[in-house]
Length: 207
Image: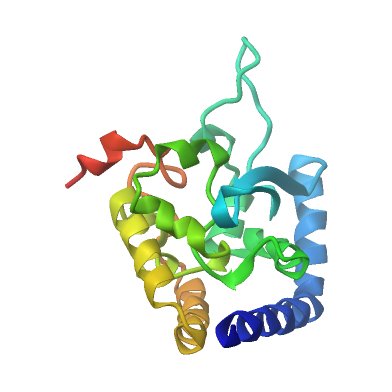
């Protein structure tokens, strides 16, 4: 109970403070996205929250909506713009999720919210990551982000869920600031961001 209440108060404090301090950057980013890629500036997508419940995640757009002759979206790497890459390297694309934190959909710290279609592919152990609210940053983000495999990412998420606490959350927030400044682990090798999770094929890995 103490941790849950303290975490929520910390989430509200950090997200409101973040919106106040970072609003000039967010306004500038939104204007630049509309100028370079057209509206809308903010991308929304259903993601898996606590216990696998769906919620609408907010991010700044980093890709165009370009499609092939049959109307299908082009691969991520072809739609990701230079400005979009910069937004991702600096993590500015994640700033609209501060609103998700205020709403209670997310926390500042927790496993990253992934696509709803991944939930049925989780093993019993991997589903433990859904026991905690998803976060803007997390243990996996400061230990490799998208530069590590899905197996490693989920193992780090489950470790966080089993060991979470106020001091660990504070440590993750401080290390996230350091990682954001160094721009490490933004994409997987050979990918624009992270390859799709394929369930069993990603567990038989990898190295």
